[in-house]
Image (tube, rainbow, N blue to C red):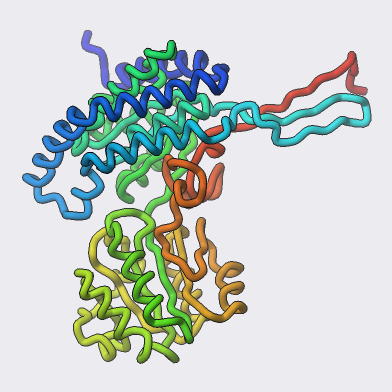
Amino acid sequence: MAESLDDKIRAICIQARKASRKLGPKPRPVKDAALEAIAKNLMAGERKVIAANETDLEAARAKGTTGAMLDRLMLDERRVAALAESVRSIAALPDPVGEVVSRSVRPNGLKVTRVRVPLGVIAMIYEARPGVTVEASALTLKAGNAVVLRGGSEAARTNAVLAEIVQAALESVGLPREAVQVVPFTDRDAVRALVQQSELVDLAIPRGGEALIRFVTENARVPVVQHYKGVCHLYLDQGTDAAEAARIAVNAKMQRPGVCNSLECLLVDARDAERLLPPVAAALLAAGCELRGDERTRALVPEAARAAPEDYGREFLDTILAVRVVDGLDAAIEHVTEYGSGHTEAILTPDADHAERWRREVDAACVVVNASTRFHDGGELGLGAEIGIATSRLHWRGPMGLESLTTMKWLIDGEGQIRR
C-alpha cells in the first residue's frame, strides 16, 4: 500500500523531533561552529545557488510573475554574500538558551529560577523568498530548535540547493542533518498535513501572501504566529519638512515595494497639503510610483489616478501607493485604525505632542516617528536576521529573532521542603 502524503509529512516531523532532542542541549560553541560552516558553504556554493535560482526565475518569468515578486525570488552574488554575513551575525549574538529570566528565593527556602529553553520543532511555511531557507535555519539552530521548511514551488530548486548546503554544514560539526529539512511537496495539502502535526510540531510560522497565512491559520492544529498583510501608513503632519518627507516616502515605498514593511498608503494633513503633497508626489512619480488618490489629492496632484474604495487597506506589494488628504492627527489615527493591519505605522512631525500621541494611540507591532517604515526589520532593530514579523499578540509581536524562538522553563531547587 502506497504511503500517504500525511504519512510522509509525519515521518519528516518525527525525524525533526528526534533531531531537536539532540540539538537542544548543545552548547553555544557547537551551534556557532555550525553557523560558521553554513556561511562558508554558502560562499563556496555560490555558483550552484545562483544557477538554481536563475532556473527558478526563468520559470517565474514565463508565468508572468510581477517584478516585485521576482525581486523577492532573486538571489545574486550580493544577496548570497549578505545571507552568509547574516548567518555570521547570528553566530555573534548571545545564545538565548539557558538565559536566566528571573531568580528568587521563596519564604520556605526554595530557590526558583526561570530560564529560556528551545521551543522544539518549528514549521516554517513561506513563499518566494529563498533566503528564508537559510535565515530560518540559522535562527532556529542558534535557538536550539529543529525546523521543517516548506517553501513555495516558485523557489523549489533554490531551496533544495540551500537546504543541502545547510545540512552538509550540520553534519560537518556532528549535528544531525534532520535538524533542517525541506518538505519536497509544494502543494497546499502538504501545508495542511504539516500544520496538523500537533504531537510533533511546536509552532508554525507562515510567511507569504494573505491567502497562504489564512490557509495555515484555518487548518492548523498547532500554535501559529502570523501577520496577514502589511498595510503600512505614513502620515505627513503639519509643518513637516517637504524635502525630508519626499526622501522618506520614496524610501518607504520604492526601496523594495514587494516587502511587508513597504509603504502602502500616504496620509497628508489638509492644513499643509498644498505645500507638502505636490513635491512628495513628484518625487514618488519620478521614482516610478503610480499614485491613487482621493479628490483632494487629485486636486493637488493631477497625475494621480482616482482611488477606488478598496485601495485603502490594500497591500499592493508593488509600485502603487494610495494617497489621502485627512483633517489632522485625529483623522489620520482614525484612518489607520480602520485600514491598518497592525504592522508598521509612521508619522513625520515636528510636533513632540503629536509624536507622543502617535506612539500612544496607534496600535501596531511597530510605531515609527520621523523615519521610514522600512526600519521595521529584525536586522535593523538589532536582532540579527529575522524569521518573520508577527502582528499577532501571542506569543510574539514584531520582528521574530532568537528570543521569539524560545520558551520558558521553571527550575526549583530545594532542601527537602514539602508543601503544607
